[in-house]
Image (cartoon, rainbow, N blue to C red; front, side, top):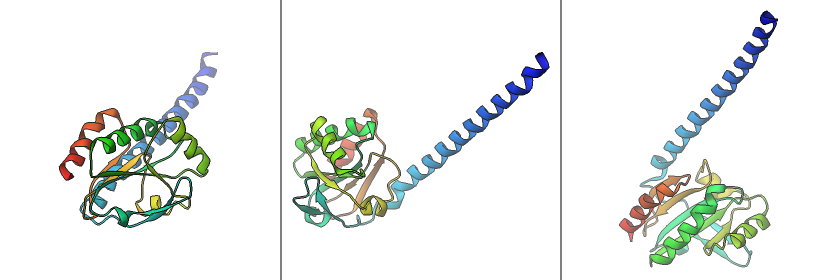
Amino acid sequence: MRGASTPTRSRVEDAMTKQSLVILFTMCALTARVYALGPEWVGKPAPGFSLRTMDGTATLSLGQLRGQVVVVDFWASWCAPCKRSLPQLAAMEANHPGLKVIAINIDDERQKAVEFLRKNRVKLIALYDEKKDVVTTYDVPVMPSALIIDRKGVVRYVHVGYTDDDLDQFKREIQGLL
């Protein structure tokens, strides 16, 4: 009996070890990509884009906001941290004249994004990246991800992910540009 349970237990342990290694490898790959995102864009002109608003009634281009400090935030309705970050970004915009926050949604279904904004009472300029062209151009690895763009259209700060602890650094970066 003892000999029979040992091989089964070994297979389970081996499977758990393999699964742990896959998770660890994935985390390392994501971390490497996250850290690569910042240096790739910082100091370079932000690629232009033009997207329709969530309700589809207007189009906004990044070029229209030249002369203002702009936060471009990529988000999705399925993103749990977005529920916390978007209201914080809206509050920052309300408290900092000269700051514009553009929330670019990448959901497959526009209606899910509209419901998310309504349910979470988010009041921001929300654009819909229906074809995923903008999120692809910026090579965004995770949701949420944000770029802070200066008045001349140059990316000055990139932030990937969101925790409440990140908020102070984000505010300092914005205040330094205003």
